[in-house]
Amino acid sequence: MEPTNHPITAKAHTNIALVKYWGKKDEQLIIPQNSSLSLTLDEFYTETSVAFDDTLTTDTVQFDDHLLSAQASQKITTFLDVVRELAGITTRANVITHNHVPTAAGLASSASGFAALAGAASRAAGLTLNRRDLSRLARRGSGSATRSIYGGFAAWQMGEDDQTSYAYPIAEQVDWDIVAIALVLTTAQKKVSSRDGMRLAVNTSPFYPTWVQSSQADFKTIETAIASRDFETLGHTSEQNAMRMHALTLSSDPSFSYFNADSLKAMALIRELRAAGTACYFTMDAGPNIKILCQGQDAPTVMSQFQQVFGPESVVLTRPGNGIQISD
Ligand code: DP6
Image (cartoon, rainbow, N blue to C red):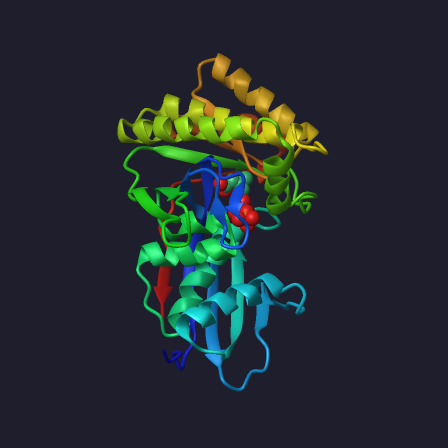
């Protein structure tokens, strides 16, 4: 395989899991214990360009205009090693990456990051991968990146091994008016990475086997809800699934939580709005920020409530986003 003689750029959006991935059965290959399902979001994305260059002696990584140290770029170099092995090359690369998130939103995501890197690095290395193989490659960087290859609703089939663990599209063009409102409560770095948090759950939570079973049921319920455009079932099941994932952090040893006081306040407000008749639901990943699922018609009401309580700059409206784009 011959690397291209010019940089290749890829753009990938982040995604929010409605059925969460939480736990691996193979740490090295990133094979999950449960299948997951997500919605790709239009507002948050990463753009990355990669050029392999014979004159380089190490990989260089420029992240939002800062040159990363070798230590900070270790995960990227390890990922590039996977690409080099696939392409049969040893050349080092220049990587330039930009995260497009609202100023200091703290929503930078390894999902969009590794999806964009997989797209740009594989093409720059001379490989032409189909989207399934691209999702398998992105998986090696970060599990949630597997799903960011596709737009709209996507699923990551857990599989058994490298060949069978990949994402596929469920509905790339979302033809109903579903929105996700991101509530940015803090931009602080999370204390327990998702990688460490899920390892702890697998190894110590007595509820872990139940999580695997119940997330399988949630997957089927949400798949059916998407097919029948049943927003309330989709929202309700996503919220339950998120809380069951967070129950694993509480039941791990040592126990911990990604909630902060504002997360709990936001959850209470969503429950209140719901009791008053607005169909809105929350979900939350490995950090205190909340994402609210609702339909476009209800977005102004929900947004104004949250803007009043948390400030206008904390509330960001996002809609279903596109899959990866790779350009020369
Ligand atoms: C809570 O994909 O960040 O967002 O595979 O170890 O890199 P690694 O983990 P990561 O975990 C994401 C966890 C989650 C749920 C999800 O996106 O499915």
